[in-house]
Length: 115
Image (cartoon, rainbow, N blue to C red; front, side, top):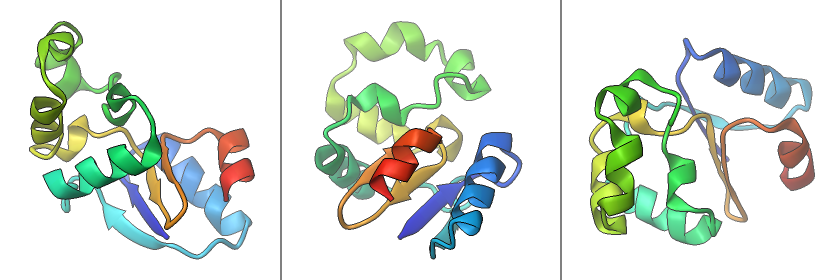
């Protein structure tokens, strides 16, 4: 299982503690230093069945500075995936990637159910 996170993010820290408390093994990946590639994002988006917007960090400064709330609705899925692959701060975190599921953000009830 892969755990993508930003170490300074309080939600990511909480998620990491949750994984450790539940003795769930994972491989860490710093989402900014090793941003997900276009190919990874496309595969996760397809596998997850989630709306593409769930992969965006909509509360982040980069998202707000780029005025993506207004721009995303006019962008194609291809353009949105390409954009996500340019900056790890645009990507919703943490992300869990397993063979069975993709989880974006930390929702404890969802993690308990899926992991």
